Length: 367
Image (tube, rainbow, N blue to C red):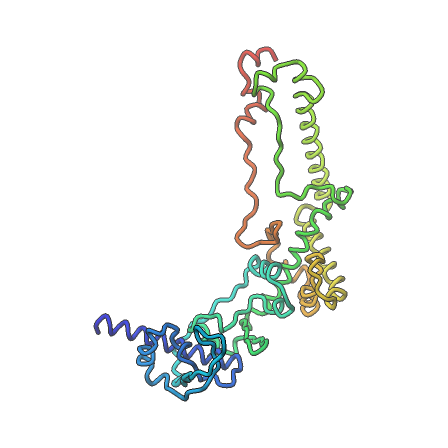
């Protein structure tokens, strides 16, 4: 077999899988004439259409010609044109060309679907589902020949599927994503409650940068007033010393609250149980409200309707029995492809200054 013959053989198989997958999608989408196809759907490139028909001889045959209305190039009115319709044969042979499709069950990715791509209850109920129309031909054929393995959802003759064996895992993962988002949004309030701080006391930025003047940067700063006057360096450095002491005090106070609760793991469990209780309590009221795009994110009725339908899984033991890891969520409610914070590494010069080893020898002798 020469190179051209091999290329034609490969192209023939590619076209067969394409038209057979077209039949499979039509049947699963409940199309009235699943075996009929137009030439443009067989091969979109007009220059390769005749060869495609030749390669598919026996698999695709001309059925009839029909009239359709079409706006021709250069004309403003719609005209009647003829369109050839072909029929697809030997569909049963497609069972030999299947490949099992992959479905996403990752917590971070499902989280991002839920909180960034939600415009209807159908969207919520089919998070993680895939449409055979969007699969590779081999995947579409696998779903068709193994329909008993999949849960089907139809909307306007548009099928979406998900493996039956993964349905419970998907439900639990979605519920956990909702709980983690609730924890993410209420975290600061929970800390303020435990520390008896006024609401809104804590900073919510990922980090903050301090701008502190260097007393040794310029000669013009060398004066008694600049060093010791109002707003001088002594005033500035003392302020930041007191500020960091206050930050450290708050951190130590929070640590005492954590210790009293039994440690971080115990308090995290308590926080999550509070989130679960809150979601269950609010769901019956929110699930039947109209969508309000100005309302807080967690007031979306689609989430609450999903919670009501699967409330038997919404328990701490069910969702966190094997894994208590906190889902990393950023300020844009995105989780996928981000990691936890980089650990703090102190600057060596700052450490030397703290130790007193970064001062000039003459100055150290006088201190």
